Length: 309
Image 1 (cartoon, one colour):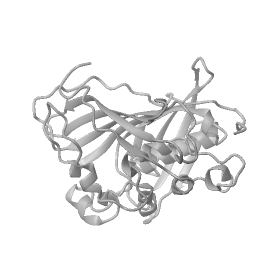
Image 2 (image 1 turned 180 degrees about the horizontal axis):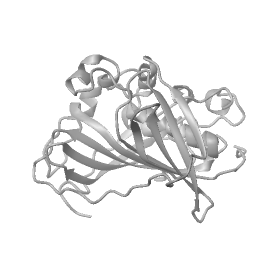
Image 3 (image 1 turned 90 degrees about the horizontal axis):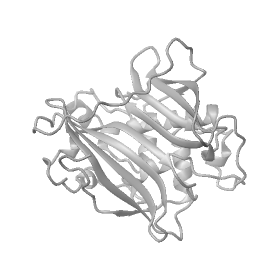
Image 4 (image 1 turned 60 degrees about the vertical axis):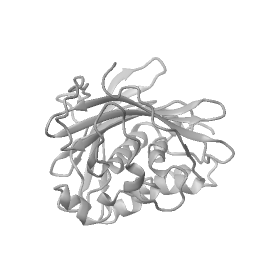
C-alpha cells in the first residue's frame, strides 16, 4: 500500500524492563492470587504477561516518571501535516506474540522499531495514523512482538489525505450467549496505578485535559481496558499461560470513567489455525451502558495446560 507517509520509519529507541516492572503490570491489570506466576518473582513458572510489551513504547528505559507531552511530541511524519499529540486517542491495537518474553531485559539490548502503515484523513472528526511497532533484540535481530496500532488525532482532519481502507470487523457470534464473562470493577485510583507502568498521559490523572477534550474529567487509559480484556481471555480460555496466546486485538469505542464496572463477554468460535490456536471474540462494556471495546479477537490455545518454563 502506498500513500502519504506510508513506510516512514521513526527513529529506533532502546527499551528495558526488570522483574518488578512485570509484577506491577500484572497487578495493575487484575492478575489474581491464583496467578502467582505473574505476581511473584520466585514462582517456579514466573513469566511476563504476554501483552506487557505494549507499554514499552511509553516506558522506554525509564524507572522514573517522564514528561508525557514532551516524549509524545514525536518526529513529524514526512508528507503529512504535523499533528498535535495532546489531542490523540487510541483507535485500535493488535499484537502478535512471536517469541516468549524474558522476565528481564538484563544482559540484552532490546529496541522498538516503528514505521507508518497508513495516514487516513477522516475529515472534520480527525486523522488516523496507523503504525507498526516491533520489539527486537538488537544483537540477534529477532522480533519478539509485532504491534499494529492506530492513533486518532481528534479534530485534525480535512487536509486532503486518503480516507483509508474499509475496516475489517470481528463481531461476536450472533444469537449466542457468551461462553464466559469477566467483571472488572475500576476505582477512582485505577488509572493512577496503571500509569506507573510508564504511560504518564495527564489525561488519566488530572481533570483539566479531559475537560478540554469534552470528557468532563479524567478517563482511564484505553490500554487498561484492552489489557484487562487480554487477562480475561487468557484466564478463561488459556489457563493463564502466556504461551497459550498468539494474537490479541481490540478497537477502542468509548472512554471509561474512573469507577465504571467493566464487563468482558467472550465467545469461542471453534475456528482454529494450523497450530491449534482457537479464535476467541469478545466485547467490553460498562455494566448497564455503552460498549467500550469492540472488534475483540484473540488466538488462544484453549484447554492447554501450563507449560513448564
